[in-house]
Image 1 (tube, one colour):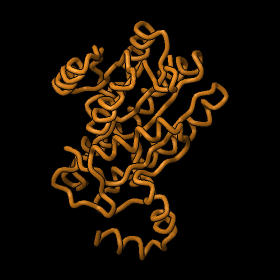
Image 2 (spheres, rainbow, N blue to C red):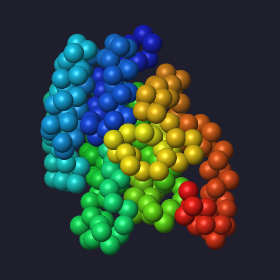
Image 3 (cartoon, rainbow, N blue to C red):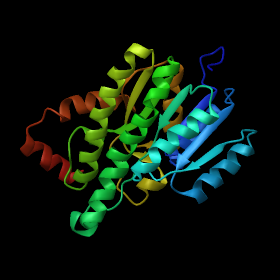
Image 4 (cartoon, rainbow, N blue to C red):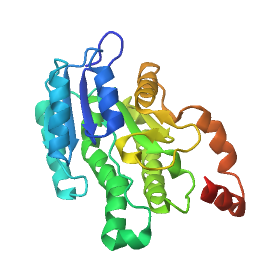
Length: 255
């Protein structure tokens, strides 16, 4: 249930080893967080983060689940049903960047990129949907990306997957409205995480701690719909998404 300040006490995290998710959960641990389920495919990273939470007096549950394995999505839903009387917050932070070169990726790499960034988390959310509808009144915060808006030459596969997922989330938000479930679709810009190490920072790059604090503001102020973080990106991409293709491709290649 939500506490007196509308902070979630029971949380499920898809993509539990995400740097942004971990920093956000550590912030949330001081806000009366009681029960958390970390979901992901990297057991070592989940166990390591689990130890961090135990040092903060939070005893996490861990469910090893590869989002590409559609058959185990129903198992995920069963675990949530069995372990939680209700879910106050579903945080969706599943994703990967990987190699942007399609020749280097090959068929399997392109498939993984699309499954991890789009079809996998979409199936996972769909498996949890009946739970959210039945209990009513919870929150969904899903991490998207400004890459969903327009493709760049160096990330168009990632961009395509994020675009599909972003549109899926917009539909899910409308699907959940009649059940009093509030949905936030967070389009982050460039955040300094382990996933972006070695990449050239983009304009308005933010630090990991800043990203988690901005995400906390989304929760505290109950912001819903599409949210840009940092907020200035909303106005930047209002311009960029309407540029003619020839200009956009030239700009995106230089950045």
